[in-house]
Length: 234
Image 1: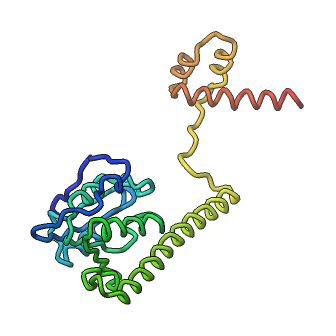
Image 2: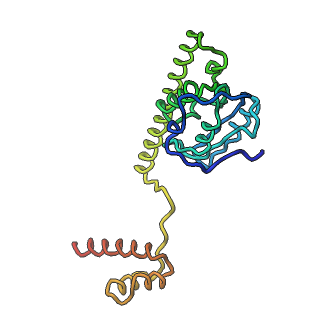
Image 3: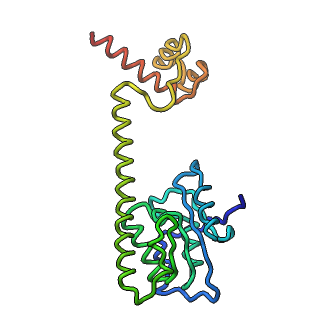
């Protein structure tokens, strides 16, 4: 797959970069925008969907970042490129934002301020190219559908986070430990802990002697001291 355009441009607020109305494009262009929330996710499905729709690969912009705060470099660049009469194609409406309010706000900026068109591939009713300023009924239906699907997208993300939290809680209750297994203590490490406690060795020297990081050695010291406290109290 051809390399896609990305940029390191950083702008805190996409709305702050927009004018009341972007200049009209002399030759309307078609752009596509794809987003994956982590660098480990694969964007191929979105890219294929956009290219099959007819978006030139050179006009597809991609962000591999979390959309939590909407500081997305390629999206910011896209807003600066869009002109009145251009078309932005999305595979799904939730590519515009991570919550209901952000989806609605970005839709408004693109369609009302820039006056560009938006096409949502998996929701054809949101194709704004099919409406004009006098199509009141079509505009109303599209606005209702947009609001509904934006709300559904936000609720689904909230439900996913809730299920994840519940799953983690249940797993912990069953004794499942998350993260890397603890490093095993080497034989005779207590001797070096005692020497450290008595001031015969520094923590760095003791850690080097048992071939372990200094932070890990100090953690073992704390655990060792807790055991001694328990034993002493009995």
